Length: 560
Image 1 (cartoon, rainbow, N blue to C red):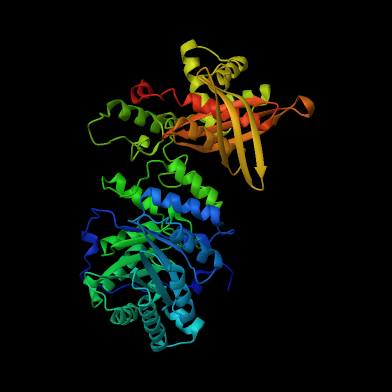
Image 2: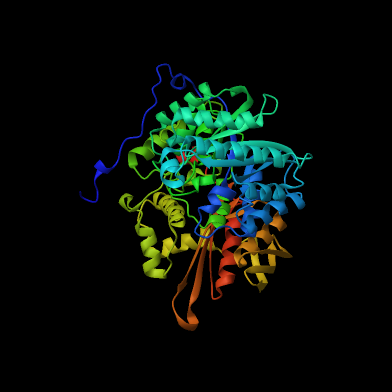
């Protein structure tokens, strides 16, 4: 048998349903969202988050509006235990947010879990055990009765341990792990047994979470599995039906959407889809899918640059430029015919009518993206030479996003001149739009203090004629300076992208720095040249901030 041979695999079984209802339904409201970034997402990282990163991710999740957040596996590691204790003891949990923790169905682990949760106002205890055929037969060497006993015993331990902490409002959650590869009648039997122990009611329901631990079917089959379960479980009115889909087949979002059609009330996932193997269901994609259909996602995703920055710095995972909704290139047209269609639609689009623009499923401005990046030119359009001339003649290696912005400036100047723009003119336009020294906000001096991986900065800047001192701290000089500038101006400032390089060598070498900021939802770019690398980066930040005061092109200007 050859190595790449499909005959070693078997198709997943389908569900025999004659009267399935989910194909006739439409999603009309957002499901209950549950983030597992700090547990499932964290355990899938090459380098799990440190305490500072966990705190930062927690703050972002709360800010976005997530109300149920799985914060760790406190019985499995001391850092997880300590993080849960910090949340409770430091009063970091808003009154409308419920923390969730995961635990296996084992007595010692369950006891440790409740110890971690002591003092919490409200919490979800999520207990699980594997139920699939392959897990039973090849991992545990048990029959159905043995697996059923584990589930029932875990439910009893959770119930009895919770009784020792009467001041906490408990919600119990059970997952038949690898549900999607478990015989449906057995999955129902196990969950019925767990609910028999917990005795939930419509007034105090439990959560039954059905995971596609390894995605192995098409989304429609998973929807059939969910509808079968929802119509065969004994106490449907006493449970919140949750799903936890993985992305092994690239269908995690689709499976979750169809599961909601099939009766699921709640969806677990992560920001931008981080998780084991190919990842978890991406909450931001599902939520933006709803948004694009006129449905309130009940999450604030208006500033994706902040989500990308924080998630990226906490997980050390980059975002693909073609990532749905939030990728750098998803609202960009390189094709001439696409550009023409977008221009014509924008010209006709009225502010008081539903959005109808070809190739743009939503208005990019809704999530902080500007029209400047919608119509972009590449080398095939004849504008790639702009970046080439600057690098050849001036040693300037512009990042792609600044190449795009400068190309539009050069194109406009070329059209106004009705002729050729040479290298000197291109350089002058670059300096005028991104570097110019005569700005309203400029750097006077700075003092940087470093302690381990932490930086504190005290800087003097000229701000519209006044000399002011600003202070901030962060992980790196640039982060500290942006924090100081945010505090001084009162504006929400995030770094979208930053790059630097040397020009020349030896004592005459210069540093070139390029920065793109998001200031109150508006992207803005700046650049600077200096013999000091840090000074160049700080000046580039101020140049970008100063440019943010200039309004971006309007729809009418773009269409014209």
